[in-house]
Amino acid sequence: MLGDTPYSVAEAQRLDAMIDDLNREKLDFVVHLGDIGSSRLACTQEWLDARKAQFGRIRHALVVVPGDNEWSDCREPRARLAAWRRAFCKAPLPVEVQPGEYCEHMRWEAAGFLFVTLHVVGSNNNLRRDPAEHETRMAAVHAWLDESAVHARLRGRTLVVMMQANPFIALPRDGYVELRERLIRLGQVMPGRVFLLHGDTHVYHDDEPLPGVRRLEVWGSPIVSWIRAEAEGAELRFSAPRYR
Image (cartoon, rainbow, N blue to C red; front, side):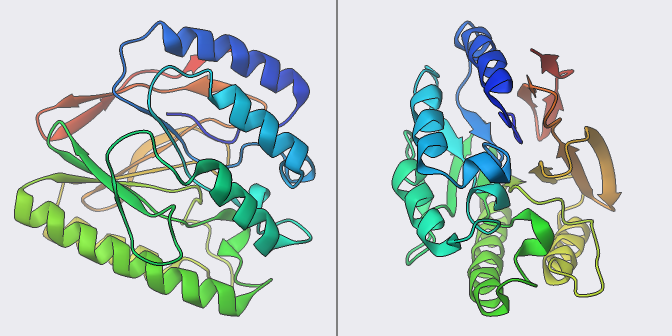
């Protein structure tokens, strides 16, 4: 998995070299955790098309999660989100998709884990810019997470939640408070069987910010790197980040 890259032409060149590395690996799938460019670049159709073509070089199934730089930080956010969905909503592996607008809400099973993508973005989750959009989207996020958690418990799966935002950045008008409350409850009812994978703040973390919930944050720009996750029973074992 990787995220918050590439933010520049130079990083895109390093990402090309890293894709060559990825293609030499035996992987079931790859996940990009959002922010496929700086907000200045990622808001343009040219950059979106270039990343779509670049990611097409990856020989493994790729799932991309939306980030704030691709749409909510742009001048025409809804148009940019629609463009992002046209580029990345069709997953190249069998997935369940939440009915309705949020085609980026996906889940699939692999190796005893239930992987779930959520559309939760940085910049305080768009709460300040567009409270109505935030409320509607987060209602869908919470419903998808709640339903997925039920599936995971009934099937005896470990739940792996993947999104772009770092939800532990709490501002006076907190765009993540209800999501954190749900994660707290999941850590209580599924201790040790909940993983949260995200990007956003560009600093590597492998810790347990909430009891029972293990968090992995990937490195981001200016660092171009990826992390391998391997199933080990009900645990995910993460390799050290690999850099380019």
